[in-house]
Structure formats: structure tokens, C-alpha cells
Length: 51
Image 1: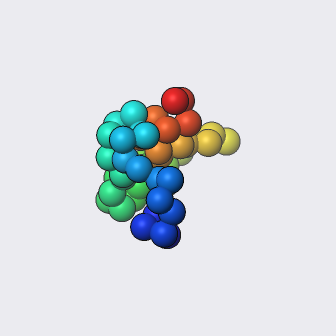
Image 2 (image 1 turned 90 degrees about the vertical axis):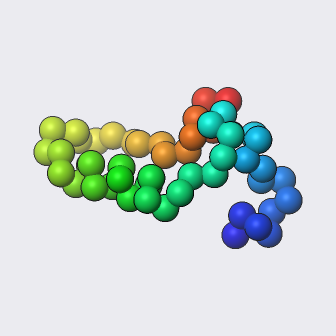
């Protein structure tokens, strides 16, 4: 869990906070509804992979 790792801090994420469950769920619903998006990796991470 995040709470068990002292190295995980929201200030290290460009957005400045951890994501919420509903934010990830919105992306999952968008992908399920959209038949045009195929074979993609969607990173719901607040820009962390870009930093």
C-alpha cells in the first residue's frame, strides 16, 4: 500500500496529489464506451511518468 512506502509522496507527482478511484474509473468507462481507441496504453498517473 502507498501508506507503507515512505518514498511515495504526492509532491513528487506533477499534478501534486494522488489520484482518486473515480478518476481511474472515468478512464476505464471512456475506453469501454469508445470503439475507436484500440491498442493503447493509457497512463492514469498525474504525469508521474513524464517527470
